[in-house]
Amino acid sequence: MQQGFRGAIFDVDGVLVDSPHEAAWRDVFNELMETDWADIRDQTSWTPGAFTPEVYQQVLSGKPRMEGALAALEHFGVPEPEKRVDAYAERKQEMVVELIKAGKFSAYPDALRFLLAVKDAGIAVAAASSSKNAGLFLRQIRLDEFAERNGLAYGWIEPGLTLLAVFDVDISGRHFERGKPHPEIFLTAAQELDVEPSAAFVVEDAVSGIQAAKAGEFAALGVARHDDEALLAQAGADLVVTTLDDVDLSALAQGRLARRPD
View 1: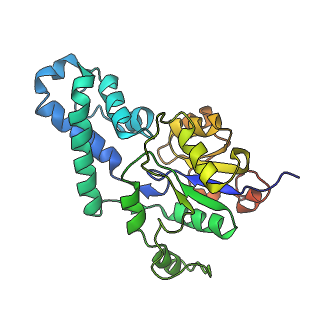
View 2: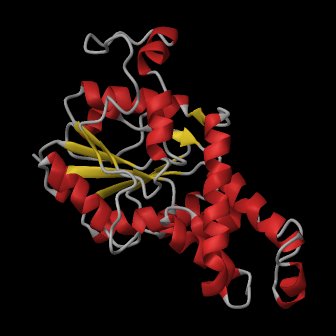
């Protein structure tokens, strides 16, 4: 019988946290096109409303800041994107930090329930986000308060436990030479967990993240929070769910990703 999973690697934005990254990327782009870049607006494919959630998911999600900024500029055909990428990325970072400090984000309850159950099952867990802002989220979310509100009685949850503290390894925000869909970030997480990729699964909401997981020979669990089940499945996810409450926890002990029976 196949051995159970010994490691689980979680993306942060879009998996654990409903973050303001999408809003920041979109609003800053729109602001620049209406102000500083108004003179080149007609040379692009951008129009008000063109920066949709689909654009964010397919073009930017899961990529490091500079790669994401450049990808957005190229997507809309902005002239001389290399000369404009710094201004876009820097202003986006300023806005997202402002939004985080203002508390304009929330944790996904299904993800916290799943994370706690995985941890309680003895599976080592790692946070592996491309975002350098991930730590800002993880430090502010109190898992002890969440567990108490939801009647989750895990004896190892201590007062003051944050989302950051529950992870055995956190490599979020580190610089990697190759971003997703290259598997370097996940391979690093597995190495620091001391778990072989074949004995771990990755939880992702982005196509590039699923591709990175499969390239690293991990099992890939796709969370479709944006009506993108088909895209995640096409990227190679072993299981796609719209809520992590639908994952069969007992199957993890057998090294399988499966949907919970109705």
